[in-house]
Amino acid sequence: MEVKFAKKKAFTVIGKLRSSFEGPSFIDNAWNEFNRGLNEVLKFAKKDEDGKLVGVWGAMSNLDQNFGIWENNYSEGLYLASIEVRDEAIAPLHWTRWRIPEFNYAYVKVENNYSEVFKYVLGEFLPKNKLKLAGAVQEFYNPNEHMQLYLFFPVM
Image: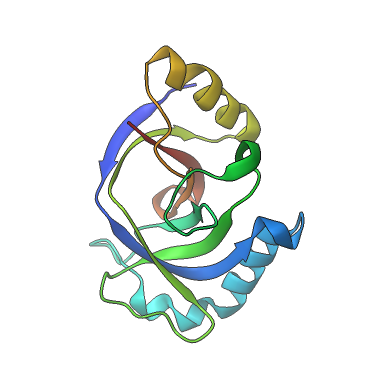
């Protein structure tokens, strides 16, 4: 499993917010609602020089919405099914706008092994490399790779 590093400056996303306290389908519910209303926010989307979306994010934060680590063994937190937008974008009614702070990230491509990647990075890679998790893990769906999923682990 290859772990790479990147520094990502603060960025803005708009999406549909759900909480882990809503039950086991909260992430699916967020994406279903996001996909139903996507046309409302596409006009704000950040795009590359080819006109493709820059990023689709399963953005996460602790319950205080300060992008801290999910609580209770990474099981309790907030999830925002979202797209990366221009920084000045304002969320339409019933949408949520987050400004995710700058972090250094360790990131890994996920290929049908989400929990394996999660456990490896947190349980082996970070301790072995004397790194600590600095915030909530983020899901990045890369539009330039047919929505390939990467997990981004903020590290310090």
